[in-house]
Length: 236
Image 1 (spheres, rainbow, N blue to C red):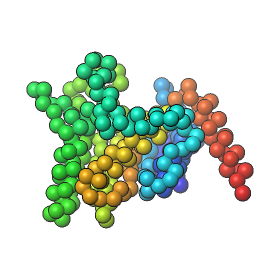
Image 2 (image 1 turned 180 degrees about the vertical axis):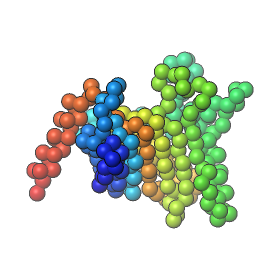
Image 3 (image 1 turned 120 degrees about the vertical axis):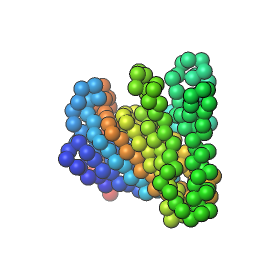
Image 4 (image 1 turned 90 degrees about the vertical axis):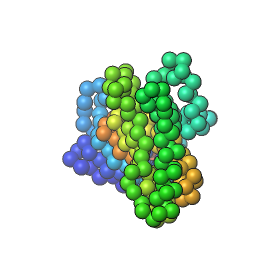
């Protein structure tokens, strides 16, 4: 289900990640505003009720079609398998570095996810559930001048009715070639934290300031949506 809000603002509410991503692509394609550089973009709020319900992976997503692609990306985010590239100067950051070893002044760092886990455990033990359990990626003194600063800005966690709800906020996002993979990895992070604090995985909420479809990909997007529509019309 999707709803247009003044054209370039969209609200999407689905049961699964696959349906949410498909709906996001369709919504930006049909309702996004045309802008230089990005092609079409929309402000998007996506709510997924069952992030581990099937289908999680959309069979039409070319970016995750190759075997092991999702697993490799999840390992980069959760296990830091690409962090070596930062030390060699090949990458300015990774999401794992910013979430699990955020750089501080004086060469210090903080594991924000470990802090979140400890705080949620404390909240659950005391019964005082707060809104402070978050991890951020942005470095104000460093990132604005980077050629490719982090798209992910913040993750937020809260126990709700025995489940762990997670929100993510993105400043800028490629809807067709990045969003699906991002959501798969972020919900694995949600599951990781949920298991650490003894909760079930709850709702996943995904917000983008600029969810866009690059004009160079428009032909592929149109073909993708056409195939989906044909399959849907052919179904009994």
